[in-house]
Every structure is written in structure tokens, then in C-alpha cells.
Image (tube, rainbow over all chains, first blue to last red; front, side):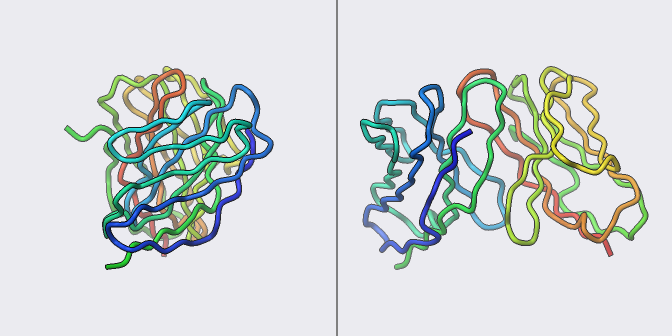
Length: 110
Length: 112
């Protein structure tokens, strides 16, 4: 599976949009982009995933560039409970496993 | 109605002991996993089972033996526990296809 690069940490003010970038320049055509987060002392939580098109659900939006070499996870109105480590992962569908990197520590402040 | 449940949540044991961690999922997923998160917070895949069959076994010592009695359960048995086995162990499951994983809340294992 392709590797990803994320900033180590980011800050965001409560109520503002949090935009978390991810580079995956070696992504293959059949690899999806997944985002997970891990709130302190909890298990990782699935957020969203996509292949080519932008995606939105109740938690976040995923913007994938046309060349698919990078993506941005958007939390439209960050709350204190969104403070967590966010992981961007690329993975083929099927039986390939999720390989976690170091992720981005997002700190949402009042 | 927890989707992926692990027991126990905390486990403190002495070196050399044998212990088991249980995992059950009620989502009807075909594939289950064990991950280990060490003190540096890196999450690493240990095992993957699909319909009770082992499909991935990363470089894990053979003191770790997963057991899947049915596709809803994946237990982890650890023999001769060592200090370095101290970590948080997460169980997860996923359906076929591109869908996301569902993780349990973790088991914090402390070997003293």
C-alpha cells in the first residue's frame, strides 16, 4: 500500500473548520484514501473514505485532488471533542490491512 | 449492543504467565484483526482472520496465538508473557470490500 505524509500536529479554534492535509503521491489507481481518528484512550474510529470523488458524511468531508496525490479532511465546525490523532491511510479494497502511520495530532482549543 | 467488544479492558499480570484476550463482533463482518499499540502510540497489525481462516500473520512471536472459533470471535492467547508485551491491544472487524474497520475499545495489558 502507498505511504502517506501528514503534518505532526495542527491547532484549530473551536467552531472553526479544521483542514487536515495528507500527501499520497505514490497512490495506485485501485487504492482508496481512508481517514481514521483516535481519541485519547479509545480505539481508532472510522471517519470517511474515497477513491476519486469528493465525499461527505455526517462527520466530515474528504477532498481528493484530481491527480489523487493528495487529499484534505475537513471537519466543518471543530469541537473540543474532535481533539484526536487523525490518520490518513491508503489501502486497496479487499483483504489488505490498514497500515497506520504517525498521524496528525489535532488540538482544538476554546 | 457494542459492535466490537473486548474483554478484559485492563489486564495486569506477571512475567511468564499465560493470558487470553477475547474479542467478539456482532456486525456480521467476515474479517477480524488484532492490532498492538505500544508506548510510542504506533498501531501495528498483528493478525488478520477471514471467516475463521488466518490470512495475515505479521512478524509476531509465536508466543502469540490467535484463535477464531467462529467468524464472530477472534481471541488472542499469549504464552510466557514478557515485559515488552505491555501495550494496548485492539481488536477490529471489517466487511468485504472497501468499507472501514470497526475497532474495539482496547485491552491495556501490563506485564510486571
